[in-house]
Length: 322
Image (cartoon, rainbow, N blue to C red):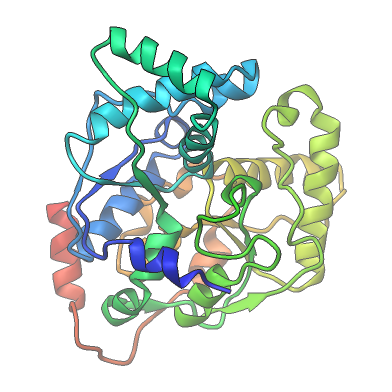
């Protein structure tokens, strides 16, 4: 069930600081382009800065040292607060890093050492509200439907939320036991959400398990994909670039050794919504995907019903301007 208190905290129009995650910038820049396109179409004010650094999660995961994460997050907060009071991120890893850091700072010793280090840099740790971009999409879903120029045409989509989206008890949009908000987004955009038995399973990344235990990672992805295929899905919707990477690229290996019957397109929620709002297909980064997305794109249809909102020409004009 959707957490209405969390939803109410999200400002509809910003301003936001859009955190530019390393993994997206280096591997899926189309996701950031799609995210900015959505914000522009919705008239949302946001800022970015080249002064930010990595969120700190990869270093924390490798070294398991709290100060690595709290100091990097604290430094980033010092940068972001110059621009806005709220942070948006389309990455589960970055989302998890900020919230994990807040939890770690509840330890008196960690907080004291963090403030000591940051103080030498002329900075201090001051928590900010960090919002996953998928939550923002749900917040603005009615506006997205009104401004949409395309629909999913009944496309059957399975959702993978990702482990790092559900690591906090009190904060977040949906329950970790049975999340459903992304399925609602699919339904409102003209698609058909598909349930499957391995919905709660990891994608196979498991922090660094994809690197140190490849066979285990492949086995987990195999179970996930076969469960999705058995349910009759035509595409997979993810809210995390890491999950996209694993589910997309592992499929090529699994298909080559015939452990899955066929490969299925994996789409990030920013890419999906940008397309629905009229973004060109060559602007959202599908060239970086391993699994062919053409079967997915072929199912997207032009919207036939007129709604009050932006016309196709206005959307195209906004796209050129952005």
